[in-house]
Image 1 (cartoon, rainbow, N blue to C red):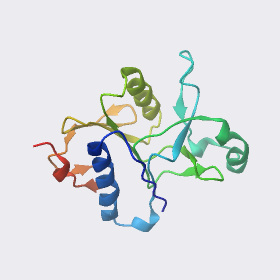
Image 2 (cartoon, rainbow, N blue to C red):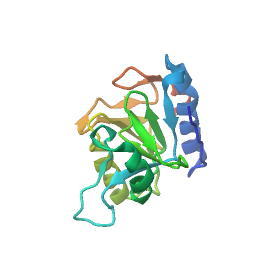
Image 3 (tube, rainbow, N blue to C red):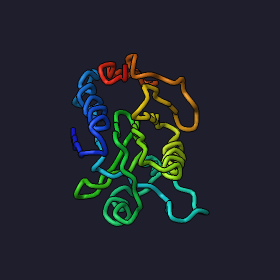
Image 4 (cartoon, one colour):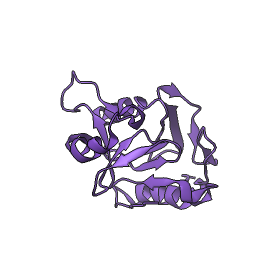
Length: 180
């Protein structure tokens, strides 16, 4: 299992991410989970700089030659750096330095702050929604609400006041992080 913890925008942001990392140890088969957080970039097809270009996550299942992709393609793709990425059931590949990852994560979490523009939020939402098997959550730093999606499907909203759960049954108890 690989774990990389970056320093983020605010102390609250860092505390929430640290709690996700700490709480993941409650998953049944912890040794079978590869977890990557921020400083490992998530590659995608397309360019966010070209407004007419569609961007989407790289579905490893659709690649014909994964070794060729790892050696000559992955390093040339654009990427984003989510706050938290979890691969449990879905496959992924990384470049030789393990700095860029490609795949459709089981779970992506973004913690929004005042510094995130609406354009950035929309781009990341559209990108993460392109993974049909990817659950993605969005947490506003100043609120307890967690907005959740599975691909493009909106899931019930959750709250930091309660134990959080993915659609696949992974639980995160972050109640001590809730704003009271």
